[in-house]
Image (cartoon, rainbow, N blue to C red; front, side, top):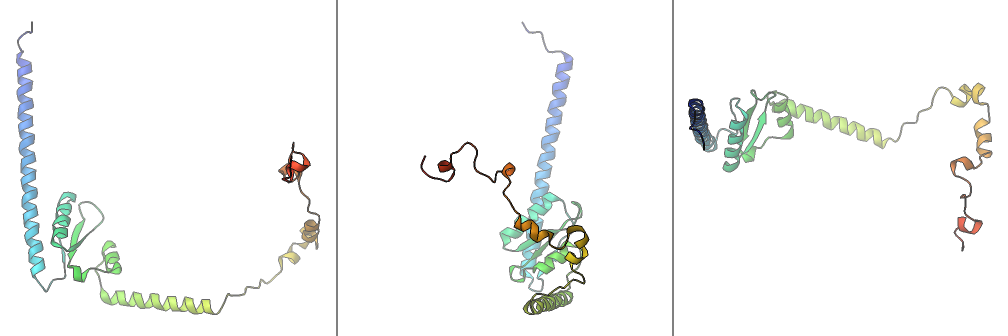
Length: 196
């Protein structure tokens, strides 16, 4: 037979129920905040689409969940979005109309934390083209012939001698210790691929 529940058990159950109720209430509040944030972002994105003077929009830094919601809203609206910034708290979202999608150079400048300047980008592009043309011209002239100031054979002749390399090449012999001789244990016919 079970004994009746003690006062301590009833107290702990009551506390657990209260804690579960608080947790559920917090989760509902968070869910409501996300829904409200999504509606606010949908309105801002809609206003951005309708304003023909704007081609891009930078949002204030926001947390990961808010950025995710904003990226989703932008994707549904048919726009392009990117997140920039170093730390999680400092990251922000920029949205662009599809017809004004950013170039790779523009994205790189935003990733470095710089403002995009089309004039500087044009200057960099021209410098790159000039450097590429110079490389192509150098390649067309042919390889550069390098002639050292001294000949290594003369420089080290006191160590290797005048004809040491040539003599060594003429005396080359197979070294059986490294497996260059006949296969051990095989007969002459087997070693050469003949009939057994």
